[in-house]
Length: 244
Image (cartoon, rainbow, N blue to C red):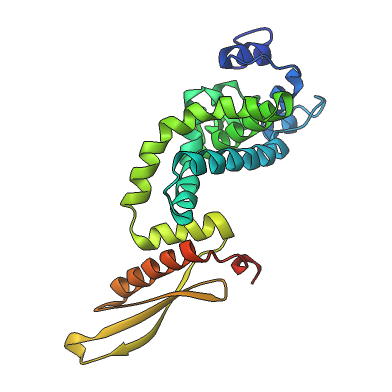
C-alpha cells in the first residue's frame, strides 16, 4: 500500500479498512505526515498532528469505558495502569503495523528515506489520527467498533506487563500517565551499624509525599515506598500534583 498502489490510494486504503468514509478528506488528513506538506507546499489540506490530538482523547475515553465495564473488580490504579500500557507508543505502533498504516502515509521523500514509515512514533501518531478521523466522520460508535478488536486482543498482554512490573515502574507509569509527572525518591534517614543499616526513603509526586519505605539498602526501601504510594493512589488519587 505505497503511494502508487492505486490511482486513488486514500479511497483504496479506506476499502482495506472496511470503512466507507463519507468525507475522504478526513482520512487523507489522518494519513498526511507533515513532511509531505513541507515538500509539497502547493497541496491543500493539513497534516495529521491536530487529528492525532483528537484521536488520543477518543482512545483514552474508549479505553477507560471498556476497562471500567470489563473489569468491575479492578481498582482505579490497576485500570489506569492498564490504560497507560495500552496507549503506549509501542502498543499503538503495533496496531498501526497490523493495518500496514505506515505504508499508506503520505510522506516526504526525505522522511521516507530515513525510515520514517517504520518509525514507532510516526505509526503511533498515525493510528491516533486515524481514530480521530473515524470519530469525526462517523461518530463514537464507529470509532468504538474500530478500536475494540485491538483492545480486546491486547488486554491479556497488557495484564501480563502490568502485573510483571516492579512497583517503581508501575508507579512511574501511573504518575506519568495520569498526572504527567515523574515520582521523586529521597533518602530521609539511615540508621544502624554499617553492617546492618536500615534506610528510609520517601517518594513524592509533585509536592505531595505519597509513600515511605524502609529496607537494608536504598533500592529496596524505594520499592517499598512505591508500594505504599500505589496503595495510597488507589485509595485517594492525587489530583493536583501536576499543577505544582
